[in-house]
Image (cartoon, rainbow, N blue to C red):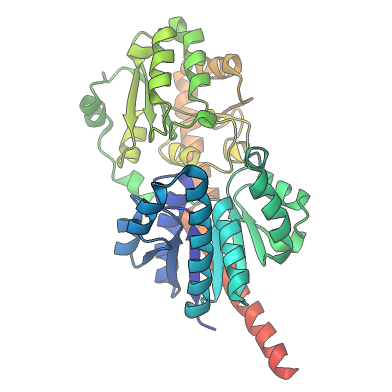
Length: 399
């Protein structure tokens, strides 16, 4: 059967899942897969990269129509957009007949599976969940739809053991579950700017202690916890410490800046926004942080480890599957600024551990979380799906 893969996702703005796809999909193309991506809303900043690497991106709703829909009252706009997506997805699946459909994130799963049902799609249908299911508490409709759809999925993927455990608890059969860890491309980290030059460009002294957190400014990423943690220990850190906050503002930057002023740490923080030179920034830093309240399996942690940074992370999702407590960093409870502060201070007070933990972290990524291993896992899974579909077709012909 043809190696034809259709990926469905909400958009291709810069985010963990989206960046993951930009690394994996071009390599699947190089292995002979015909890959295309359907986006359900605006296209996003990562589209040019994918298209230049042989992965066409198709908008389910053309930008002109999407713009018109967004001008309507919110409830009406949402309903109209959902209906438009379902109709267009069904038409596409029926006319193009891809062999494998793969839905990334909850909205794409619900709309994509519904569109496949309307189209009478008979191929393999896969879903990838890349965060813990706490979103179901906020989005009851999504949770209800997922419960209905789970029995009809060919395979459900998670990128951490914690996610797989939740999917199993949601009664997806164990033989329909697959764990595929994120993979990191180490090549960009071999071509980074010299540490001193990057620090100079940022206006930071060579002897400064630099912490870095790469995460979009979203409440659940825990930036406010981090500000409180630094407030608790700032008098115990060397005077010229700096925190680099890298990530897109999703509407909370002003509030975070105000909190930083109130907590008397604002002068130590650089809000850098979304950046394309993350490997350079990581190479300039000393300690990496991710203090999320919820997570699936974070690329940001793996990238920090690849750059040779010891990581201080919260015990959510697959974070502790990446960071080995006391060897490559520290794992602390979420929403606990005091424990976060203690771990940061413990690491900052030991230059020897910063160096040793960082080297172990880099080696751990190379051994366990390589991009090659990740792509191999996807390739093998898709091949299994093709074989299963071919067997089913043969059985129907015999009957």
